[in-house]
Image (tube, rainbow, N blue to C red; front, side, top):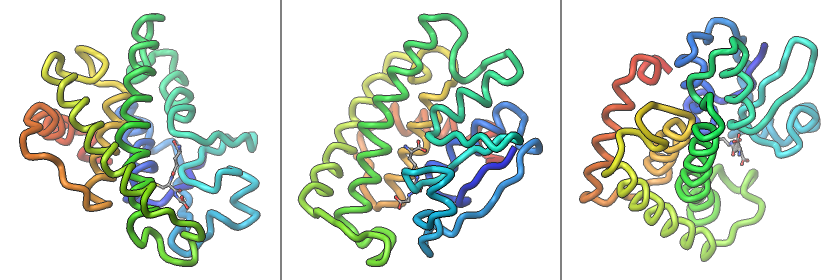
Length: 207
Ligand SMILES: N[C@@H](CCC(=O)N[C@@H](CS)C(=O)NCC(=O)O)C(=O)O
């Protein structure tokens, strides 16, 4: 298996964390895609992911899988012992619900702020920018953090008692928040404590 990514970027980090949590990092070959240079917008990469974004998983038979949730589902279920995406119908539903809330309300909102309200990846890549939309999404990211803080005031992890794909998305979302220089409101104590706990997980620290 190959993972096309850019080490250090928030979405690729989601898959590096999932791989480390599953003890599978050594089973994949990482292929560096030069995103700042626009390699992800060239035909060879678009043939693997028409969205022009990393990460992408490529199986040994050439099948390509994009979108972090789909890649995580695949990796988590390969050994028949899913630990990140749930086992029961109810757990799977809760994890997907919270994952999506963290994705739309935090990670994607912070990414849109970065690409539209800041110079982003530079003029060659950011060919359309809408500053007002970007600013709005920055506000949405802050609202998303407030919501996650509230959830974490009642449970240790976003989808309940155990660490899951939803936590990985939110953790990467906070990394994007830092990357985009959005301030985390000081009073979000539950979110900050959760972040410290997640960062201390051996797999997360290793990724
Ligand atoms: N929804 C996608 C998001 C992927 C994504 O936006 N990746 C970023 C890197 S963090 C990227 O490749 N950005 C390049 C660009 O937007 O031009 C996923 O889950 O994989």
